[in-house]
Amino acid sequence: MITILLSIKPQFVKKILSGEKCFEFRKHIPNKAIDKILIYSSYPVCAVVGEVEVLSIISTSPKKLWEETKNQSGIDSEFFFKYFAGKDTAYAYKLGKITKYPIAKQLSDFGVKYAPQSFVYIK
Image 1: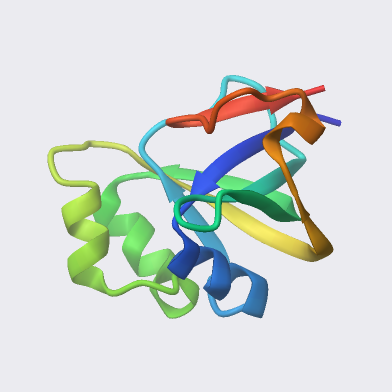
Image 2: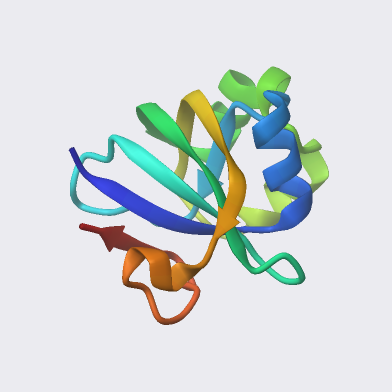
């Protein structure tokens, strides 16, 4: 099982944990197949608040990705297309079972010193 830790803005973390946001969009993805994402809620929360199963990774053009994910994206089209501006390929993790931690954890609990800009593998 391969797990990564992603830094995600708190407003999107809230939507993921509620089930409103079923896709996590990224400009780059790891080379390895990912099974699970640890959710690091960035400033001002600054804590790992839960984890989510990765069902699949979608890789396609931004336009096609939006058409496929828009109903469960948790974001609006303006934000989406601004995020992927100038990119030929867009990625989305299709999220599955969500586990919210009863008590948020620190990065150090996972052997991580700094919040990643993109992602970090967790052993």
